[in-house]
Image: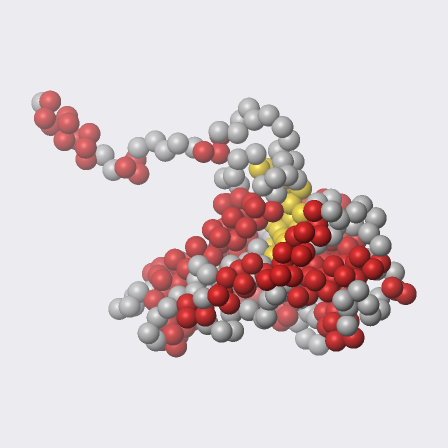
Amino acid sequence: MKKWAVWMLLAVPFAAQARLDLTTLDKNMAGPRSKVLVLGTMHLNSMPAGFNPAVLDRVLDRLAAYQPDIITIEALPGEECDLAARQPAKYGADYCPPTDTAAIAEMNRMFKTWPSQPSPDQRRHLAAVMLAANEPASAYVQWLQLPEAERKTGDGLTPALIDKLKEISVRNNEDYQIAARLAARLGLQRVHPVDNHTGDNISLPDEKAFGKSIEAAWASDRAALNQREKQEAVLRQSTDYLPLYRYLNEPESLRIYAEANIVPALRAKSAEGYPQIWVAGWEVRNLRMVANIRETFREKPGARVLSIVGLSHKPWFDSLLGQLQGVDMVDAAAILK
């Protein structure tokens, strides 16, 4: 009987055994807790020329009321671009636009002594440094906070760089039309790029076959997503995108996008396992992005963080960020009411 009991005990699957719930470890923590709001967004570069950013005004009003002191965006950090440039055999020669390593160091140095009331020449210089460091959204934050008369050459801003900032101002991109505009409105000095593509930089002998395999998997089960996208298309015709962003950030929307992204890929049969490899890369990318977000407020207990990211990432961000110690997740639907 004893041997039988021991065998039964060993046969119990590990999954059936109780797991430690790490989310309860901060129950009696001292000090302030941080709050994190994840806004799932459509990628505005899909909008046609002539898109009017004013349709986002009420969305910005709701986000401003949340009063974030840190805003993160789905863009590659200059440090990652520098890393990739040093490893061209692994990441390729076109991983990022040119990034000046010295400019990254200069930007970080400037922030250590940044005054509460920076002068126009300081803002112009920082904007120029940020552009060199491959931080265009943050450069635009500085540009927006310059008085109109001070948006001129000097302090490192050349005519070519000013043209770039003017081009940014009309670019259909949530990094600029939501994040940077909001940061400038709140008096923040930058936004934080947190994207990562080292995790899904997959090296395969036949990349075309890999891409076709993933596309075929996704196409096999799109019924619910197609219905969702039809309603999104209707809401995009409005002159007010607040209803659209409410719709995008509904729990049902997040469920449909998560399932459409992952379930068909995991179920797809492939001799090479391509769809499953894609899922693994997707997971690594999200894990590293969330780690980058955590780093932005590591030294700032009690921070109010807003992470603006493509809608498909939001379910992963909500889940992973919600497991961090001393962090409370903020309901996007409640903020967008």
